Length: 326
Image (cartoon, rainbow, N blue to C red; front, side, top):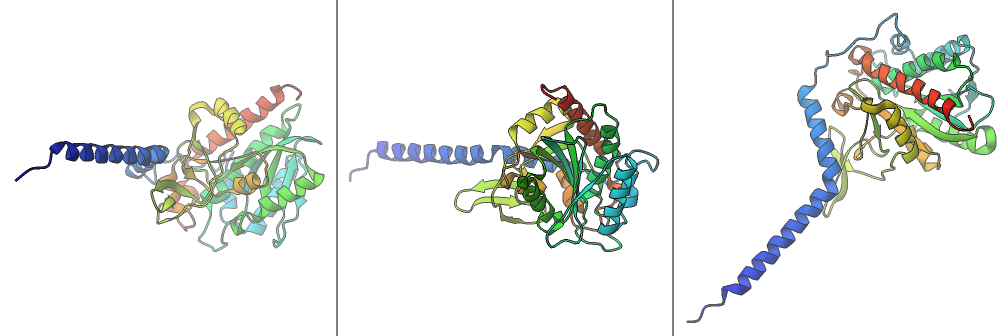
């Protein structure tokens, strides 16, 4: 009886091993950013302490958050108009189709091009127990606090504030503003969107269906939003120039996620070919605990995170005043 030469088996085994290593390498390579950010999410989960915050000072710069939290969207609009007017600013209402409430556009100088700082002021629901503290009361409070600093600069920086409406209804306010600006009403060089602030550091995130994106052979791109796994959909990266400028100013206060996406107004602006960046807080586990839930309350906000966003806005406005031609 003859026996087959073992050489053929060795070659086949080695070939299969090489194929396995290449496949594993491709899988790991395609998911390297996802793995890194997934470990970050796991660390956030293991170390999460809901009460480990510096509470908002009722007499401090973000005290408006405490008032806004319990207001309806219409009351929020009125509070914004009154506060901005008291600062000597002139909010311009920009109508939003299918919405009773307008965007509020607040230019600091008569003509652009403007860098626009955006925060949506609407809550997804107006029930008595829902405050929408992270989404998006905190960012509105920060933008109002920064408005006082910007209004006091001389000369004023080439900045405009945008308090957008109807974000929770499919980013209708952002779409309406993009259309309005495209008709010659405002010259926009870029937009920085602040949404879901509250814990940890600041994070620039790509725009797409919210959650951690990853890739699997066969199913393709998926996203885990902290509750379930679903289809990922398109992913739009943040504008590179804005990202570079903001990172240089914020330093350690700001990180950049590559696969931890967020569906914000920046998505609508990017689709309209307006350079845009979305800034949230870095603690995604915290956001997943409170997002669209009654648990999203002001007592869970950390004032230190809001202060980071405030400092970045002021520093960025000052950098624009130092820029050539400004």
